[in-house]
Structure formats: structure tokens, C-alpha cells
Length: 399
Image 1 (spheres, rainbow, N blue to C red):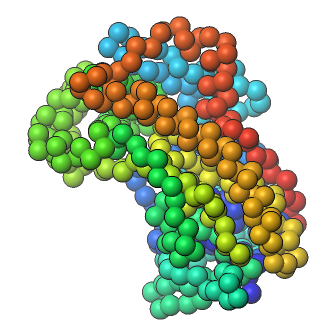
Image 2: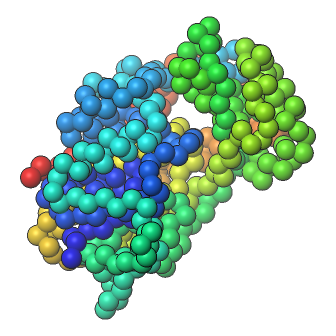
Image 3: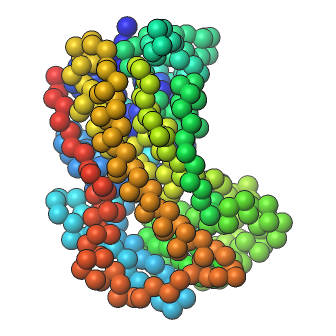
């Protein structure tokens, strides 16, 4: 029997598997796809996650991966730019956000885990159900190309995303908080004469995020919730014209959006479980709390969940002891506070800024240009963006 089996090879599952294997725990990680290559997945690695990588001795290797450092972001309004955060004033050695493709991050983490003999990675393996005995989870069932299989374990962890199959199998239903928008992701070439900074462009009826990928812009156009059909009914030419109007330097490039086939839609949701566990079962990351793309903190919350889980559970798992519900409850309580606060901040940002902005009848609120320069406002936002609420540190030993 494994000590732990984890469904889902995203940031939460991969990091937890590494931490447990590093601490001598027998752990199996299942990923339903053949690789980690998925376009337009979250890929903002914040200082809190960089610190975790540093504590694991992986920071230098991470920084060899092609990435872009961002020391803040700019709010672009019709009246001019507003510098919203300056991460250079954060404490510690990591005072920037690193943009790196998520598959590179996941490959780094799983490759590090593979160095430990107690780690096993199963690709093309989709978890679809729980093994139950005496009212407790005792592992999971999964399918791969060869058929259906079982893995028995003292602890089964659902890290299989916002549509978690194992969460549903455990009878856990998240509380939904809603969101006023969905997101259309697309990309356009970037020239050396373009701006450098990551930005949020707002104008009445429109909002768009731009992430500098060196050779191209990764762009996110925000639309009212459920507004995709209305947008496509207006046609691709109207969409191109809107993008060019918001960012005039892209006017000569918008023709490369050939059709809406070049656009990928993300349905935005904010939710969380009231209870993250059952006997022998735990949900973390997006399976426990789906985050809005506001502030780009999804990966970092998932990594923090993984670190806290390993810190608390690695020792009893290594000893082969069943995990008492009281310990799972303790973990839930520790991670519920940062989840609640972060989601509350995201909801404020969505409801006070994004929602009115993309409503052509209302438009963006007026933001004083000097507000972010206020020491209290700027300091709180800087720490929230860079370090998050209750950042976790690696306490597990390497065995």
C-alpha cells in the first residue's frame, strides 16, 4: 500500500508529491494527460513560490528556464498609466514575479521528485473513483491505455482541478461566489518598440491584460459573464478593431487573429469547499478552491497548500500511520484563512473594477493616480501580491 496517492499533476499535486518523496514518503502521482503541455495555463510564479523553490534547492535551476521578471504592473486608463505595484521594495531576495510556461515549472518539480526512490509518476492515468472501506477512503481507481486499476493508500489527495472528479466522489460540493466576467486568451507578435511592462488596460466597456512574452504578447480580453455568443455575433473584424483601439501599437498585427478559433475562452469561477476532507481523503489547490485570474495568484495558493500539507502530514505518512481527521481539520483551518482573504480581495477587484469597466453603461471607476503611492496602500498591496496571506515555508526534512 502507498502511503499517499495524488490525483492531478498540476502545481498542487506535483509540489506535494515532491515534498513527500523528499521526506521519504511512498507517493504516487497520477496525471491524466500524456504531458504537461497546455496553452494559456496560469504561469505567474510569485516571490512566495520562488522562496519555496529556494528552500528546496531548486531556485538556481528554475532561473535557468527562459522566463521574464516583472517588478510590478501598470494600470492603463484613458487618462494615462498608473503604476499599481512596485515589488522591488519587498523583503527578501525575490522581489519580482517570474513568468514561465507552467509546463516548464511542472517538469522541473516532477524531475526533482524522480530523484527519490519513493516517488512514482503515472502519466496518461485518469482517476475516476475512490476505494472505500469502513467509511474511509483507502485509495483510488484509475484508467489508462491498458484498462482500469486500483491504488490503495493511507491518504488519497484530490489535486485534480476545479472540476475535480475525486472531490465529487467524496461527496464534497464547493460553494460558488460567481464572477462578472469570462476571459478570452490570445496572442500577437511583440516588437522591441512595444512597452515592456505587464499591464491592465481599461476603458469604458473594455478591459484587457497584456503579458510580455518577449517575442509575443499573451493577451486576455475580459468579457461580461456569458457574453461570448454576443461577441462572436459581432464578428472577428469588430473584435480586431476593439483590440487595436485599446492598444494602437498592435493595429498592424491584429489581422493575425484569423478567427475566433485563435482565441481560447476561460470560464472564470470563484468557489471553495466548506470542508476539504473526509476520512482518508483531502482536497487541495483548485479542487478545494477555484481562484479568479485576478492578481494571478492561483499557482501560488496551490503551492502553499502543498507545502502546508507536507509540513503537517509527512511524518505520520512516512511512519505508515492513518491520518486522523483532527489533523486534516487542522490543515483545512490553516489554509482556509488565506483562501478566504485572497478570494475576498479577488471579488472586490472583480466587482469594483472589472465588472463596472466591462459594462458599457457604467465604465471604470476613477482611481487617483497617487493612491498606489500611499505607503500603507502600496505596502499592503505589494505584500499581498508578492507574498500572499500566510506564506508557507518548507519544514520537511530531506531523507
